[in-house]
Amino acid sequence: MSNFLKNRKSTRDFKKKKLDNKTRTEVLEIFKDLEEEVNNEYFNFILFEEGDKIYKSLDGLAGYAGVMIESPYYIGIRLKEVTEKSIITASYYTEKLMTLLANQNLGTCWVNVKDVDKYIKANVLGEDNKNIGYLVALGYPKAKNPFVQEATSSRYGVSDIVYKDKIGNPVNIDELESRGLDDLFYYIRFAPSNYNLQPWRFILKDDKIILLIKYSDEGKTDLMDAGIIMYYFKALGEVIGLKNEWSLLNETNIEYGDSEYKPVGEFRL
Ligand SMILES: Cc1cc2nc3c(=O)[nH]c(=O)nc-3n(C[C@H](O)[C@H](O)[C@H](O)COP(=O)(O)O)c2cc1C
Image 1 (spheres, rainbow, N blue to C red):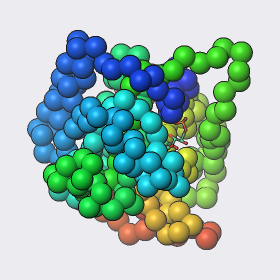
Image 2: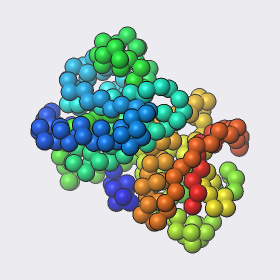
Image 3: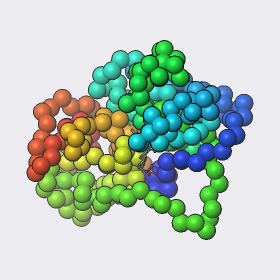
Image 4: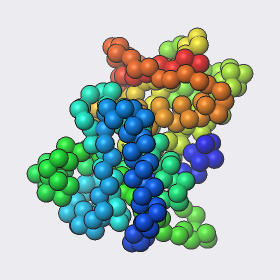
């Protein structure tokens, strides 16, 4: 998991190649298994197979500043009901899905379609899918040139995202080390986030970790980022013997400096 996280990267260059039948069936089975892990309660994954048509219709409208990612398939993440819990659960399982797809040598990239007009989404994705906020581009990644150094997305340091007792209070790296959490926080930073904002902040307090999500300069939080980081925390935590689950918090926001933070979850160590 730590190797996977360090080397994971969003795929933005896909081959046009279609999935072979066996892989296609396996992908659909993974969708079903993950939906069933939460009793089909919160979300559905939908495989869109007309990648070309979707790309052409959404180019200029979806993705960062209208830059649509071109891929032979897209996965739709459709929420059954829009609640904080369903957003966090859906993003948690989407990141788990992306990890399982990487094991099948498939590449993926999150694509933001929140701001695309619903009428257009209904036309391209179908009436039932007009409220979808995120797609995942899917396909076989193009081979990389081993002689070209690839651009990587920057990441904050551990001390920028982990605090002791309260936000702003630095955590001692020796304490993280003695509690066996230093590697976990080192690797978790490679998680993807919307606009690479890395809004996750962790507070180590007694025997628990509290997850906060920082509001952006525009005063927004994206709970998709919360579910994604909770998934990686849980998966890396399992490697070091942490057996608990996240529980969601419903507490008032915290202000520190010029910023505001939303307490999202708590994990007992
Ligand atoms: C919720 C979410 C939405 C994203 N939307 C887009 C997008 O619309 N277009 C895009 O190119 N990348 C998108 N990304 C990918 C992030 O920009 C990327 O994960 C981040 O910059 C880190 O880079 P890396 O994945 O290569 O490590 C999104 C990521 C997340 C988690």
